[in-house]
Image (cartoon, rainbow, N blue to C red; front, side, top):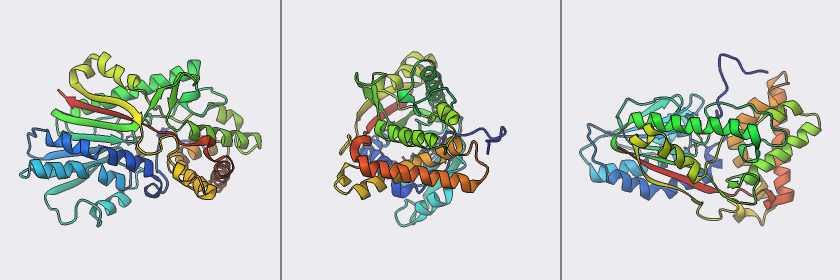
Length: 366
Ligand SMILES: C[S@@+](CC[C@H](N)C(=O)[O-])C[C@H]1O[C@@H](n2cnc3c(N)ncnc32)[C@H](O)[C@@H]1O
């Protein structure tokens, strides 16, 4: 099965069973709740509405918690302004699941007629909102996904952090181009005085790593590498396809996130930098699921669920589909892959622990 040339592959589509397996993303959103309230409280909105947009919202409860603080702060500080909430994501997002949550008992719409809810469907690498219309923009756990898949010859490495030479440069060129593009479009959409808050996975300097940085999730991606390699060795996936496969993402260091904002004249003129930081995630940032280590079965299942939620669609499209002839074959390969991954975590437990650093970027539109 090959991707159609008329439908170029997106880097993500259809996260699997997202709400149950997104504790790390939910924590990232909740960590910024006070900050979002503070930022909205400090706005001088021009009206006629307070427009709040969450880019890359996903289908789960984190999409509610990403906008709730802004709604509440707006009501507290600007009670006369109706609030317009826009959830933005790709066509493959589970929009039904999202809007059931929005209008459900834990949503923000229960009995509120002074809030408008809308979806913006497309890519955040293009303009998604009218110019100068957004007061508060957020983007959680999404901006690390590149605008398109990247094919580089990189045997032994399935992600950016272990790439070297030309292959690493190719992926970085795409990553920095995408970051600048995302920022440029938000610069158009956000009103003067409005805010953009981006929170995602980051990287920190680490001299022991081949590229001098430790990237969030390095254990996870190396576990994926080990399992993919074992399947190639057993003749289950094509070794040539594996050699060219890399996840289309980049977890930036503070410096990587900052440089375009300082050196690109258009971006420097558009935004004041309020904060750019990479910090250990609250809790056990050396093993996000460390609390479950005493029970290897539970520990392994949690890793399986978490990894499957973000990686299933990418692995299917880029690694399993090329070379097989039916959906059933792809399903069988995916099952084998995740069974092996679970077994790896059950037997090796924290060798492949999920380490997590949060990258936070807060910008104010000039
Ligand atoms: C890991 S989920 C995060 C969802 C949610 N913001 C959260 O924090 O739980 C990543 C989301 O980013 C979306 N995404 C990835 N690339 C995107 C793009 N180019 N434009 C819009 N959304 C994108 C995916 O569809 C997915 O819903």
